[in-house]
Amino acid sequence: MELAIVILNWNAADDTIRCVKSIYSWKHLTPAIIVVDNASAGNDVEAIAGQRPDVHLICNAENLGFSGGTNRGIAEALSKGDAPVLLLNNDAFIGERDVINLLETLQENEEFGVIGPLLFDAEQEDKLLSAGGKNPIKHHHTRIMTLSAGDPVRTVEYVSGTAVIIKAEVLRKVGFLDEDYFFSTELADLCMRAKQHGYLSVIDARTRAFHTLSRSSRLRDTLFVYYIVRNRFIFIRNSPYKFKILFHIFWTSYSLALWLKLFITGNLATAQAVWLGLVDGLRGRFGGQNERVLSACSKLLNSASLG
Image 1 (cartoon, rainbow, N blue to C red):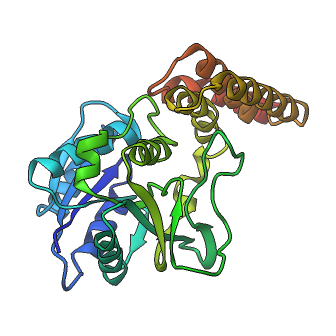
Image 2 (cartoon, rainbow, N blue to C red; image 1 turned 135 degrees about the horizontal axis):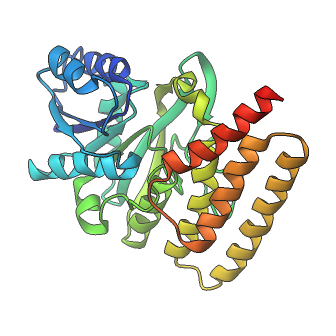
């Protein structure tokens, strides 16, 4: 079976090296591994190149976010052929047998275009993180957190980008990840576009992947919140629905209520992230905003600690 794997690195060379090492322990699959460094600040490039000279390493001159950085890897993979592309977080793990099962399921039905495993917490391996996702402008909580009885291969509205396999033909027909998102929601957008072209996104409940959430925990109250709030407005813009104004009104009202609640309860940094996400979403200020958002939120964190 042919397979290309794209792994994004940003200031986490140890995670990336560990991830690549686990893939090279596989016995049956020999995937082409593409690592994309998103302008890491330290010596990540040297460390990865020194310890894993066998991977194809792409070095971006600036941080292009998850969507932009991943797209560089996807483009490289598709330039080599039509192998399915596995997007894998460098702080995630999936076993070879699970990948083979996913590839076999992907081949069973020509309508299957995007497939993923059940996603569990690597530090609490019985804790389900996601069994696929729901439309992010129709649902507040978008992750499916329960498993119902029935066919183990089930259609979902999107598959998490933590570990997802995409057919090459899907990427060629519907395009790559929308880089306006920068981080978060871009897989939901891709799966929505794939559906418009007749491809289904599915989860195979017989397979598992594991994600170490603690590696990125310091950003979850600020930067992650910002992109989740803002990117819903990009999704509304890209969606096929006729009455988009209703979604705008709802998510504007929801975000204002969330901002007020966080402000009143003293969570000022997270409140600032929500406010910036709302304002940027309504104004159409998309793409990467890491430095600006972190700077604004850090000032509030510092003032709170001094107080």
